[in-house]
Length: 282
Image 1 (cartoon, rainbow, N blue to C red):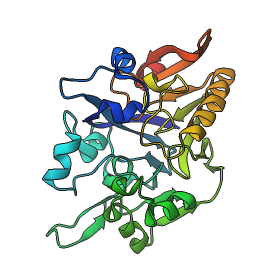
Image 2: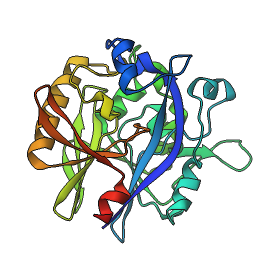
Image 3: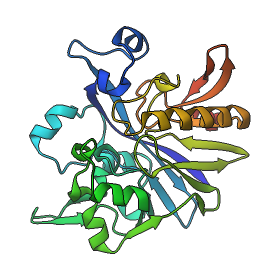
């Protein structure tokens, strides 16, 4: 097994939205905003190479949305999805399994792209199974009013039409060393991958915990549909991570790619931070 950090891009969105009820005077010390109250976040995926299987987890916003949309999320600074894969020695044709943690636009927008004449859509990864939880799929095709603006049907309906859509119904080991578990606080049926590597477990945090700044139990996004469930899930997960010495890999933290955790008087908090490359070099 080989594991690669796939840095796609950075984007800017409102800091208050990312920290919910936490006052700016607190969160701004840990994750600074600019004069427009915007914070910079990462779009970072992970690619797990099992030899015969190439598993990519999430794929960023893609480029299908219009100029008005991207004036709100302010993509900046990265090579984009295909460039990020190329930087690590892969192409979109190499991917055999596209695991979508959930179907919000910043996690699945790169799944589908325009065809050459922009008359329709084609699959970005033509040789891949696209994995999504049944719960999240049902949630996305019948979106609630709270989440509706986060779902764009052109990001996922073509997956079903292509015949490449595969459903996950429950926690399972998808491939040896690559397991997935379902969490429901941020949105129904969010997949969190657990990757077993050389006796340690690397966890792709997705939106269960988008950054190290979200480690305190009450520091959660306003986007979470069930915030009390998020707190419950985070509490249980962080204690599990502490007990099992997990490596946490962050999809959105622009400052910290990975960390371990430790017990403190205030609860479970960050221990050491490092990149995935630095972790493998030790």
